[in-house]
Image (cartoon, chains in turn cyan, green):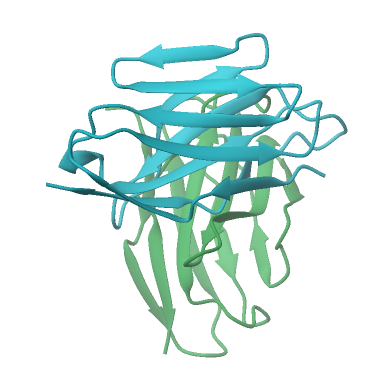
Length: 114
Length: 113
């Protein structure tokens, strides 16, 4: 089945700097890659997603890139702000077989220092 | 307002007791999911349902049970057979089973005392 690895587990940046979180997946048939942001005590919320027919997608300060050959995808946050501090999860789904589950990475705790 | 609602937010259970966590959605979504979240382990899938009256075991189903009698409801029962039930439980739904955004509830924190 699908396995998703996420790095780093913690990331501390200064306000205004960029942050990059990387994920790798194992199932080459996966075709949907969402990123979720989770604030303390709340459920995760989708911030951006990408499908396998696209190499890059951008939404204001957030961008995601996908390298299908290497089976990895990354989240880029530019001009970070204190309110970006949260746990970020990557996920992958759409792999082959009867069970098309959304498999999550282990999360990255991002701390933006003012 | 459309959304997915979990209740209660906090739940305390004595060892040996079963407890049921509620999850309701008014988004008209076909698929619903239960995840367990532990520190440093991300989200692990307990059970999922692609459509009403159908559900499948996820990666960590032992000690849990679910039902999907109505499209909008997917309750999770944590039984006494679950060896380490203290965790944060998240319910989610998506419009269809494949490759679409999952909307999460606010979670239920279960503590066994």
